[in-house]
Image 1: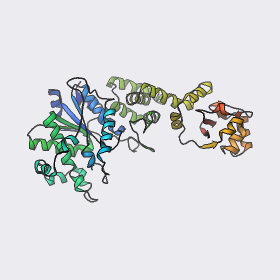
Image 2 (image 1 turned 90 degrees about the horizontal axis):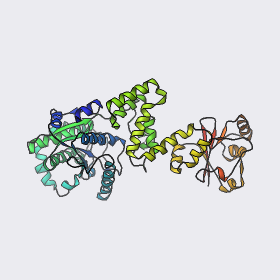
Image 3 (image 1 turned 45 degrees about the vertical axis):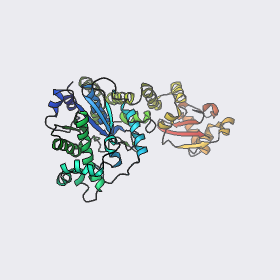
Image 4 (image 1 turned 60 degrees about the horizontal axis):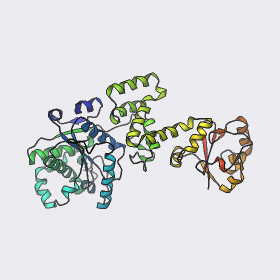
Length: 426
């Protein structure tokens, strides 16, 4: 497998230094990507860079994942309009450990010569004094060179601290150190990192005379112009305690056709032939969302598990199911997923004691929950056959009781196909 050719057909290359492809063709090459440890989980924006390392290793090269234990204390100004809060050592160490655990889901850290390795730049910066740094590193890169970088120019009017200004030198030294100590010849990263990366190649050239190369990936943009990896609730995280597998699956299944065609190349390991076959099948029946399903299933399994995928699919389909299958599906659904599925649905609370003695459906629909405006409207809806309780059609004589509670506390009321209401017994 040709690493660069693989990235090119997948649309994963933005910039590349001359000679980079020849370097990868010549020998097994070590390359690295830096990950920001300002949180204890990576999000799907980081998944682009993870996939680059996955392809690198599959092509027989050696991936290094650098976590910025030192640079996390400084903060990268690239793409930022304001300075970030700096983190303490204990928080950074915790974040670094969590990130390594996530990377181990994708990369093989024990496969011989091209095993993935994780490095922390705090290890070489910990005892590097300020005076030593400005003498051994600072003298090689001019202020003019640093000011010409977009990440600096864009902030000159609003202001930038010396801490952030120095970031490109610090990241440049990371590349130099890895080149010297790990024979690392290529740095990979997002297109916003180009300026920082070439500072590293320049530092290597001036300090040691070695060759060094760079490859950057495009920043992903959604077809509708909204930011990739963001929802109304914020980032889509890889950690299931921050973004549940259901919500994770939903993010991908709801992608537009245009975005899905782009994402399936970037975020899956499917071959060109497999993807083109899926695209053909999708074009013949777009309403079946073949591309979105293939994409969502592939990523959810690799980030979470087969079991999490099955639960997410079941939860996604529950709103479209009817009768006994729907009732059983609701009752077997874990509470966390149930809450995810019905997040934002109007709710009302009711005392468990009332449920135990029985609550007529007309009262439940009107005076107790105000789901419907009056008892008269409730009776009409029941007579029309448009009311369901836990996906099961009910009539005017229905009395709600404890046996109707899902997970011992919820009742799902529905009018028609799309109007839901949640009753919570407390």
